[in-house]
Image (cartoon, rainbow, N blue to C red; front, side, top):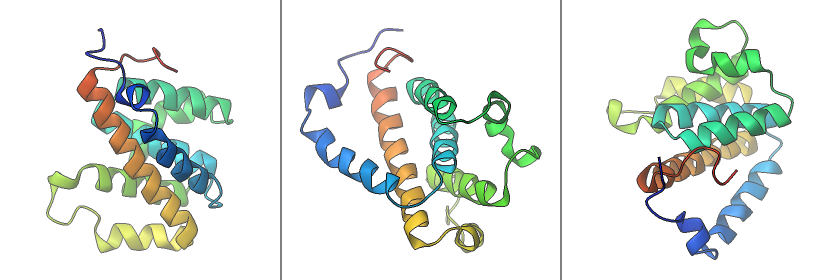
Length: 151
């Protein structure tokens, strides 16, 4: 598959300055890098964004994640490999990514489960990671960015 156009972030480099500041804040939040990688991967899987799945797996491996766990992310509910905190973050990622699937996408139950494991700074990082991932998923799928081409 060929991209329809150069990625908009490359065409409008000033657009990425603010995004980089958000990533920096996420990194300084105290949230587990592994959890953030899992959230990114799950949202990207749901959205069918091959560059983000490819890049997410590559980044997660570089940060110490295992192949075994990465292969289980799509079926995390049926896997014993994830902590309760990771499960809460993955549930939040799914709900916030699938907004149109139900009237109250991120239910109070999903939020409460995440709030049991993460403080407000960590929750903020998780919510922002989900939002940025969904933004990049939509850009990449719209322009048909091929996996691995810009990673």
